[in-house]
Image (cartoon, rainbow, N blue to C red):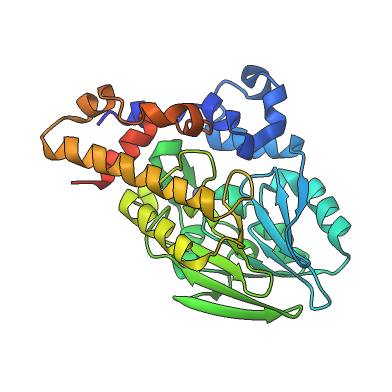
Length: 318
Ligand SMILES: [Zn+2]
């Protein structure tokens, strides 16, 4: 496969509302230097990000607008935060956190290693957070990690940004009167995805196993695959009822109905691509067959279009 053709364009990346709503108001050429990478561009967009604070249930809130969606549980034990957004959004995220409550940051959970969920790790640690993640997330953040699809090589993070506690298959946290269960999915979007379920509030943060309203990125370079994504979508459905409030990694907060639609679309596209690949069709022929066409108007809305998603699926089937 032509690697270049699978790379995501910078324009599509920043066109995703969940990555950088603020960047939409700027022309990409004005915003990015010519040789600036997609990752550097996304990071830079964090400086202009507007953070929306959305009350969920109980004390829980979501901060939306800088990288992956962030969940916040405040309280007298100190705040528990799920994912840390872009470093360049530190000022806006700090303001949003202060508006929720003045408690210091106590614990930070990383749902996976990607930069749009972990770039704020170092400053949140310096503000008092112990960082918790799956051991594979810790591994990727501790070493040089290449993502070909982003044409970017990530150096190891500084020690202060690296998780010091790992989750194993499951880990339960107790603070601020809440019980928070962190659960490992197995290989899905990466090989280190964990969910965070707040039992009393009945709120689930799925990390990037769920992109609400966008085709998801699947990071094969660090152990993700389409079949694991579908398994994770099933696991998410098994964890929720009609009443559960669900924070996806990207896209608006929603619930079971939207998660079922997402699971069904992933499954349908996977099955169609697998069938064509099984018939001996080439990647180009499968792309030309436009198996995602009926979904593109609604789902090719982030930085993954139908063609790129087809390529991501193709890699993981047959
Ligand atoms: Zn991700």
